[in-house]
Image (tube, rainbow, N blue to C red; front, side, top):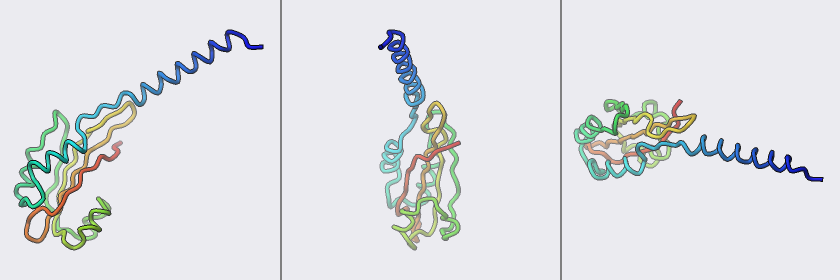
Length: 140
């Protein structure tokens, strides 16, 4: 026989589960997206821009009050390129002579996590940008 209190416990359990899901997944706060930063790059420093323009872009990059860290240009070797973006590095191959990048910390935050947005610029032999990547990666 089905007791009315069993039905109430089921409803209460379902309600608690729904509220927990909303709390954990509904509290995502995206401050800047990959799509937004990609559009900024395409507009301000398109492929073919010289490395000084890339450097100026990174120095002037502001996203609200988020902390942004950028690096200097580095000579591209298999050791220095590491595992930053294996697909892009394989695609560009030996055409990459230098690279640089920036990190926008806390670009997306949630109840239990925050993600950083990582930008990498790849420079060719003539000192011009040959490509770039923008990716959201998990932070700690």
